[in-house]
Length: 284
Image 1 (cartoon, rainbow, N blue to C red):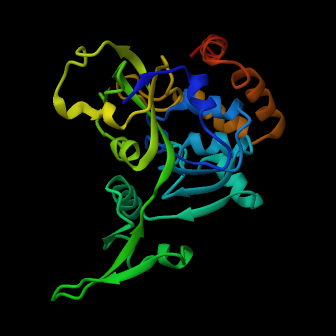
Image 2 (image 1 turned 30 degrees about the vertical axis):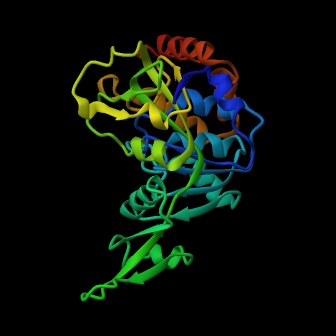
Image 3 (image 1 turned 135 degrees about the horizontal axis):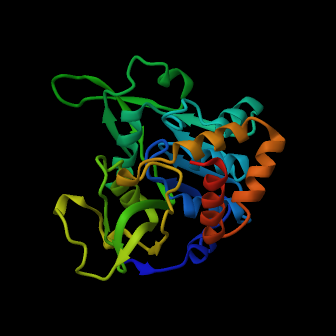
């Protein structure tokens, strides 16, 4: 069951070579405070499992990643995550590509401790060609249908970000889409939750269907105000201006070095201060 931890304690419990799942979807509700801490850490040789966004891009930019397992890596309003695209063009990061539906079935299989789950998703598509490790199975019933056997996407640890959590690790989301975060929590050996706001047990008021993550699947929980910035946090929305600044900086080595020095070298308090100052300078 979950226990209150710091960002440093959570990232300090991870090890190089791990397979780490990251919740959220594209550039929406990513656990960016934890991702930024991994960026600053000595961790390397990681396999990242994610509906990818700037989480994947930042860690590729920092040289932390050996392999990415994902159906896409995008910033949503900007189609391709620039650091991931550059890493793939340089050939420095391996990539295992899934169809979106296949990816979900891989999470489901891992969450239920099954070796694989069958699905029609991906049949007849190029995913089967670019991912030759995938296998098919035939239904044992009268239909005899051939289906894709999606292997379980098991992970050593998962990082997810929710709107509100209690000190025991129960997590509530307020946005329009749960983004599979509950599956990441169940599929990983350990799950760490960051949240915009932390409350005491019994104070997670709201519809029960918004209680997305159970403390039974959470190892540690940390409060990180604006910890999902600059990704979309539902009511807060996405910081589109800052995301455009991130993407533009990624296109030029000198600009990226300046971006990293200004925003990524300090802790979360320093990050929030730097972002506020940047917005004041830009008049946004």
